[in-house]
Image 1 (tube, rainbow, N blue to C red):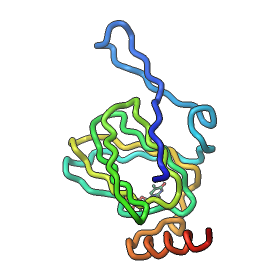
Image 2 (image 1 turned 60 degrees about the horizontal axis):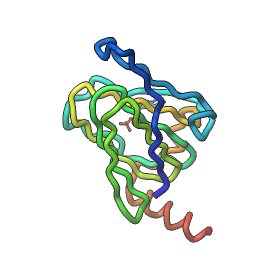
Image 3 (image 1 turned 180 degrees about the horizontal axis):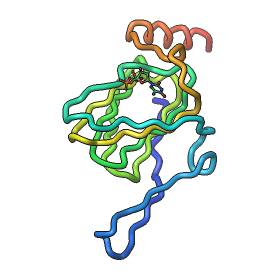
Amino acid sequence: MKYSLIDIKSTHYDDKTAGGLSFFEGERDVPFKIRRIYWIYEAEKGTHRGFHAHTLNWQLLFCPYGSIDIILDDGHEREKVTLDSPSKGLVLSPGLWREMIWNKTGSVLCVAASEYYDPDEYIRDYDKFIEYVKNKESEQ
Ligand code: TYD
């Protein structure tokens, strides 16, 4: 499946009660040029969002607070990745169906994306997604 997990650099003071600091730099740590950053917050435990694929966007997903399951589907198989640490990053290439499930109230999902927002670049119907995957595969 076309995704990779990256380790987001993170630092702590010796005094752990002072918290951590995580960071990444465009093009150095992320394999695409970042055009947009958005985040989802104040969602309750059990919230289920997503249910779409992107045709153009590369994305880096990370969860600076809480725990969120990311279910990925490439039209053939499903895999689950749990984002439960500020230093875990999930890089998704275009063409993956995703669903997100909140494991903890208030978990924050941040996304760095390669494209500006364009609703026409989304596939929001699962049957159309399967059709898209088949068409892509027949082009290869
Ligand atoms: P949406 O993609 O439907 O969220 P999810 O799939 O996670 O449930 O986005 C919710 C709303 O926010 C929708 O009206 C579009 C808008 N939106 C923007 O205007 N710009 C953006 O960059 C994003 C991600 C969403």
